[in-house]
Amino acid sequence: MADCEVEVVSYGPIKLPYGTVNAFEIRVHNTDRQVKRANPVETYWYSPEIGYYVKHDTNKPIFEDPFELIGSERIDCLVDVTGAVEYGAQITVAAIEYGLPVVTMNAELDGTVGPLLAYMVRRSKLTKEELEQLKELLEEEK
Image 1 (cartoon, rainbow, N blue to C red):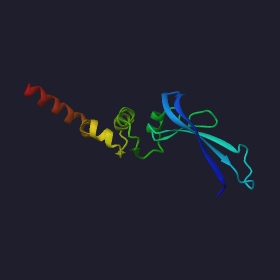
Image 2: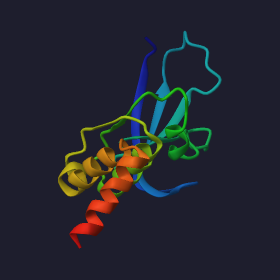
Image 3: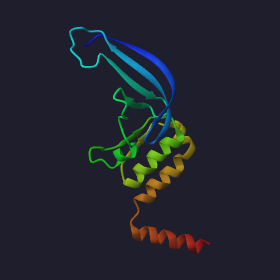
Image 4: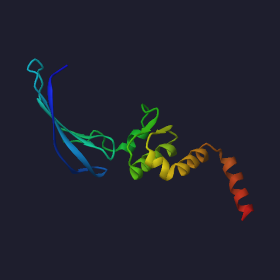
């Protein structure tokens, strides 16, 4: 494995196509002279709010739009470990609407809107006839 030094340069807001997030700017210096690299210093931006690297030293986001990942044929399951309620809820709701299985390790999300998300999942699995029957039952109760 190549020798390297890691330096945390700063923490603050960075603009991305899908909004502004706070992130750590991290520089990785390659110190192994045996490894020939075009760029001996790589810069990453890590957002603890999202729980993932959001930019790389090319100054382009790794993901232009994280919601595009939900529709990808290569994604089998969404795993949320962000710890961010609003962002986690937006991504989770989009995945549920798309029919993508979701695993959440986000206790903040589960404690805040977990029952609502569980209801959405149950509702998304109903057929159109079952939804109509449910609507009729709810109207009769009024």
